[in-house]
Length: 98
Image (cartoon, rainbow, N blue to C red; front, side, top):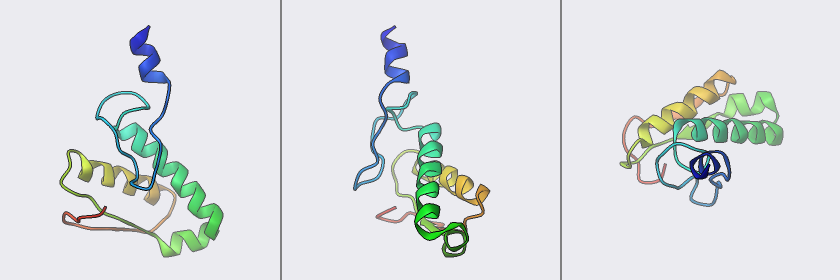
């Protein structure tokens, strides 16, 4: 029961430093599902603020650093945004502030 509670309750919060947390399964850990869902929410927010077409045209800049899975998470975010028609500008190399 304790494992189920940990996996299914609580969520990482998106703060001024983005998403930060331990890697692992569950909504309160860093993993592809959490990145995917967070990116969907961010995309919804940007489209609501700018309008769908303006958000698609302006696009989003994504980067990644040297932390474990950072590149994979950036690619996951890029795929979500592109699936919504948003232009993605993805750095090809490590950057200090993704």
